[in-house]
Image 1 (cartoon, one colour):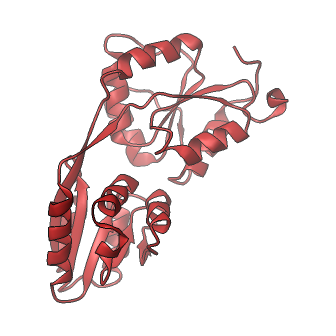
Image 2: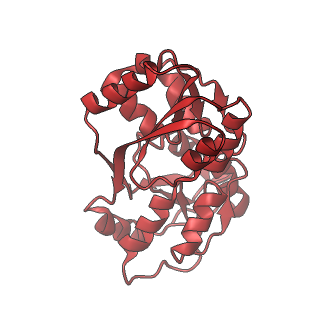
Length: 259
């Protein structure tokens, strides 16, 4: 009986697509939760496959050491779809966290560095321990990516090529889908990025979240952006991963009959 499971009877709203949040959805289901998927961000490529390949080839033609730095699984998937995993051949590869490392692994790429602290600062610190003086770093990123990583690596002597390859937008149907989900009775909302936090507020408009809904964030950076967007954060994952986010939700909610 799902009611006897740790999240039995709880309804959790996931704010990424099923493809992007499969591990999170599966873990929540496994603990007995009912999961409602309402994507609050969609990815729009802004670089063509030819542009991605051209930039990667420029990096590969530079003197070693050569690096590719990924701060999201989305960037990994777009690069691989555009140019294949072999595009990072001859480069050392850095990943911001486990989800990004997993996306690389699915493409057959083993990252050389995985940030100990899963954010841009942590990735920069981990890369700098490998020595960045004279390195050329390719950073395929979202259009709103912070300058933290390039600035830190440049300070360590690297030349950083920032290539904007995608932007995140809110799907047009998100406000209606969110209202419908909230009408079903939601116990928790999971946020996995600052974009999901900002878009949650935007999708709500003048509507307030019903009281008692747990806002759970995948890490401190997402939590900070959620608070800045006017949301009350109730739980922060101890590790920036689907497993950590589920643990944060589980720590705050007990089983109950499903409404």
